[in-house]
Length: 259
Length: 81
Image 1 (cartoon, one colour):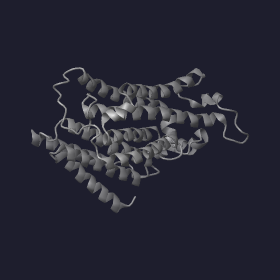
Image 2 (spheres, each protein chain N blue to C red):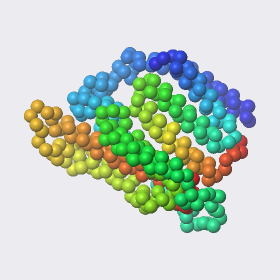
Image 3 (cartoon, each protein chain N blue to C red):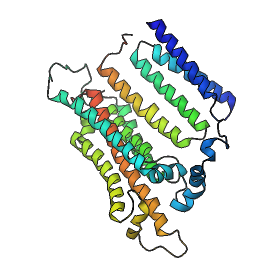
Image 4 (tube, chains in turn red, yellow):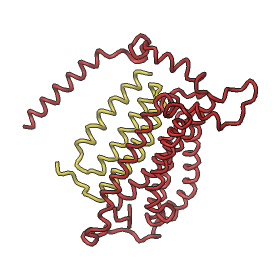
């Protein structure tokens, strides 16, 4: 059986390698993907149309905002599933899951704690920068949210989980995750209410103050600001879910002890 | 792209992939998998896909390694196969 599986793997691998030889070369300007009109449109028109220099963010949050909205929902659902499945352990056989031999709370290394005390604010500032600056440089809601969530995880590892959970209660994790989805979908729905299509942020220009003469028109600035709003929503969901997954995975849903 | 750099990274990718599959200690496997993610991140960056590289560094090498280590600590450290 093992031999058969090995042959199957080899055959599939050979087939994939054979198929890969048909791929266009890296950066080939004559490849179908580069020749298609939509690529040219994104490359030449994304800056005039959305006033966002980072083309990746423009595609991700504006042109394909629908896709990103449901990516956020996928992360939310995955986190809720983990919290739902592992959270049951808190109410059932609590005694059978004997806690691992672990240090008492507060019995942690002072050097580690104080290093984290210095490091975490910088991490969080960087995370907020990544979220807010996703238009102009690599980054955005997903990356910034993960860094923000990782800073909470770092605090939970350096101290202990109850200390970290005192800041963000388990119930609030789910609330913040849901809030992110609501911000994203709500922005889309607001566009719908403004007689535009779903997630067509240019409809939000009515909320902007009148533009200065010669400045970028409000319809275009609204798309840029709309992207920022949905990125903030994504960051809410991602950071809350990352911390939630960590708390539930590291304690098997008991929310005590931790790594 | 510098082909020498790419060759080195691809070689290390294959090595780390095989190690993380073969090693019996699941904690080592998780850490080697984090190394694999970092190498892929280098590859994305060398191809100019900076956004993807950023995501890979944050999610693949950072948080998912922590999740796997957290799971290993709560389940078993030895792989049965």
